Amino acid sequence: MFYSKKLKKFSNIRHCFFSRRGGYSKGLYESLNCGRGSKDNKKHVVKNLVYISKKISVKKKNLILMHQTHSNKVIEIKENNLGKKIFSDAIITNLKNIALGVVTADCVPVLLYDKTNNTIGCIHAGWKGSLSGIIFNTINKIKKFSSDNQIYASVGPCIGKQSYEVDLKFFRRFLINSRSNKKYFTIKNKYKRLFNLRKFVTDKLRNEGVKVDQVNRNTFTDENNFFSYRRSSKLKHSDYGRCISVIRMI
Image 1: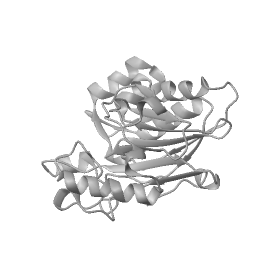
Image 2: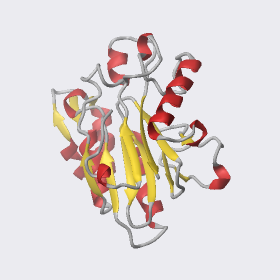
Image 3: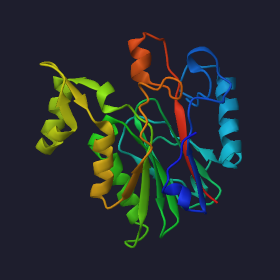
């Protein structure tokens, strides 16, 4: 389990970037796989989510997860949509005793807290969502509660720059979006670049006036602690597990 030093200072919230350890899944999914969309035994995933709920001190029905689609869609969790399926890549709430969760396997989990307005949130920030505005949309939605805000974010474990090799088509897509995006890439060879997803996400948050800290772990290289889509693909595994990151207000 990993924690943000900044978020830990606030007594009215709890959070955790959970590792892959301590759960019930077997094989490729060993052991704390929280990916409902994986091919893991569904009973094991449910037991893992019950474990997470107990760790964060909420009922399982109050652990809110998303059906993530690499979009830029943000949904506010209210009393009237509790228990409903949520199709988005970010969720926010000002409800107490509701835990918000995001599952990842190389993409960036971001946990958010607006100290002024007692609002929490989480973002699934892959390259697609980050490029299409998921971070701006989430922060903007929080700011709509009040123009007076003080937002903190922790950027969690994700694939590291040295592990994120991309082709020129990928690189050009970012340049078309903005020439300034060139700074997030370094040359590996004539045909490949290395992409710094963590810095890309962090800069997007800071551009919106968010105070950011890091849980700087590389999911690709740290097999003992994290699942990795890219690592599983390179090893030709049939599927992969997902880690979960959670935040709640007390």
